[in-house]
Length: 270
Image (cartoon, rainbow, N blue to C red; front, side, top):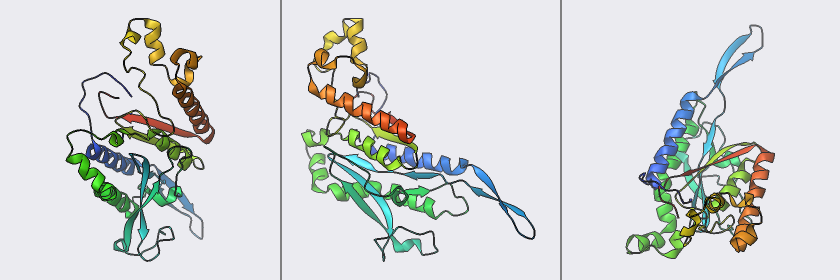
């Protein structure tokens, strides 16, 4: 997780707090899932009520990869989980990893494979799967990162690799995942994207003079895709590439009816 510079004094939130917030969102969605009536025709017409599908899923972006956890059958790892009556203990958590974050990131799994219909209050199997993913997430990442995570914990300084944020690639993966169905996704981050596609340079770094003139400050907070003649203003090709990336991403989201929110959980961003 990682994001932008915003001046404030709010306390930063970490990995566990974010997972707790996601679980609470899922719990609220489950309680408020809309109910629809189904008319069953026959000798005696009857009306039954059922919850509308409300699906939720989660994946992580860390260092230079996207990590998609999902639940699969132990005995049949090549197929999606069917809504049958098999024992949930016969399932296990697997992981799909996207390492291409520099050129063409994507969602590696069908949406149904890593999202769960938590709105179905008459059947809590998917809710239990989603809770299992959330409960296992920290341990899963610790196991995946292994020695890298332990070396960071024992080091007095944060290694440069751990300052990487591939949030731009995560946004592309979210858009790709929802392009067939449409929908809403939220990216939770503590740092601006600075690695891979969509990387943004720190436009404030070493430039306190930006705040001496109103027009300079306005340009500083203007999204890169909206700054005119940005190459002449910044003298930095990275701004041009980033501007083109976010313009294209916005156009694709509008085309496929996808809404992307970005939540920054750090008060001071870099």
